[in-house]
Image (cartoon, rainbow, N blue to C red; front, side, top):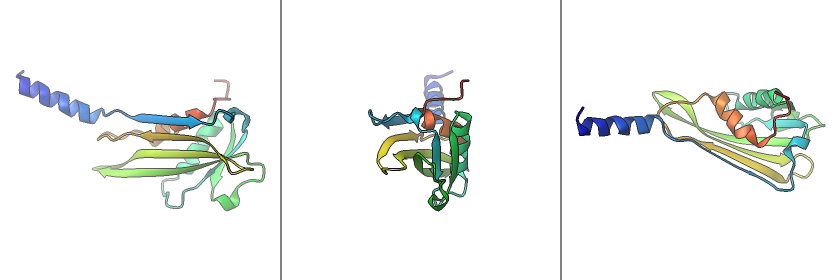
Length: 143
């Protein structure tokens, strides 16, 4: 194989396997594991139901979680997760960025943020992205 072909093949592999980045920041005073009742506020423009996916993941992690519009939030909610998703289209539509902001339901103070970003040609399953961004919450499921 010639050197130009090897370089071209490596460049294509680099584009296809582009790195992803998950950045999280949690307030040092906050203990996210102490929040048992979590509500995922549905983003109005979300037609793919990421709020439900995030809530299902939190339930699997041992939390009492639900989702929907803020007006339907349960009274016992302790933490609220707001999210913004950015989708892109390259032959298929896929999630390129997911930003989460966690705030205390009583005070409204932001206590944690998590951001996933992956500019790549290959799509990642949104459920896996949700799991990666929710790693700011300790797993309470015992698994």
